[in-house]
Length: 157
Image (cartoon, rainbow, N blue to C red; front, side, top):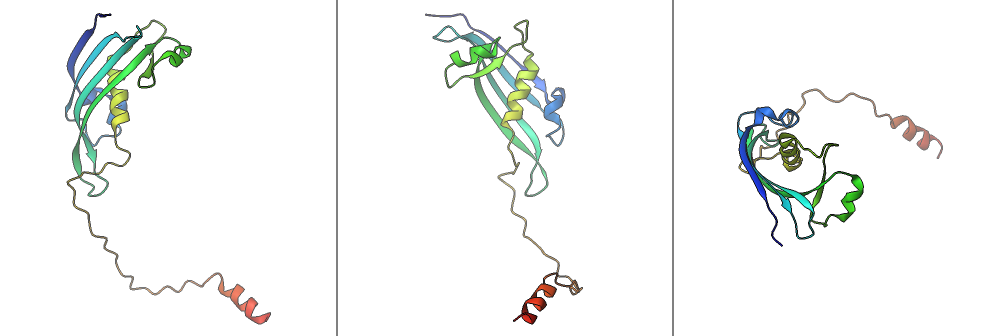
């Protein structure tokens, strides 16, 4: 069975993603996206999201800005009630539409980009910084809190 599919593509500036911007070092750059709407073999409605971007992140190894490449493809099953989620195939994530059956494209793309962010951003080209510990010139005169216990123990023997 052949079903009609509709595709939309475009480019959005990173500056337009208010929630994503909080995780970026700056909002320089764009996201190229393509959305394909259709129905699968079980006649379930879906949207396939494809997006590519270079996200400016702060490397936690070098503490320098770097561009993290993101290329994602995600198929989401369109549902209007949470009960419909169980009918979706395992490989399809649910996307709950609003009460009018509509979705905001920018929010959908932003959600997928947020999920693609690394937990700890590390530039793979960054060199590891050597750990340098400054030796303290001050001797530690802090009393050992367990010294009194040790003295009691020795006295009770």
